[in-house]
Length: 66
Image 1: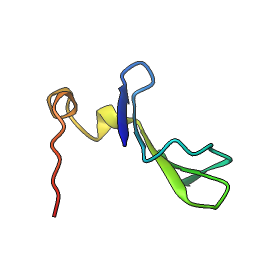
Image 2: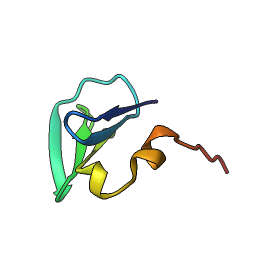
Image 3: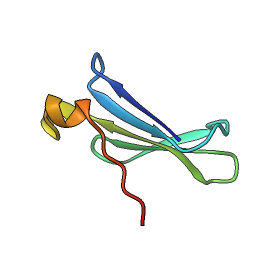
Image 4: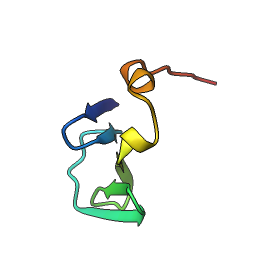
């Protein structure tokens, strides 16, 4: 899994695996899902993240596992 914060485009992207993206769909304003050839989600992009999180929150990402 890879996570990328793009300050220039004000976006946050989670890439779940390296499968080729064949389709993307904006499921609600500012939230885009990327699909592979098997219709599985392989990426999630959030646009306008500066309105959703502070720079401090974006500079440090915490992971939790259950």
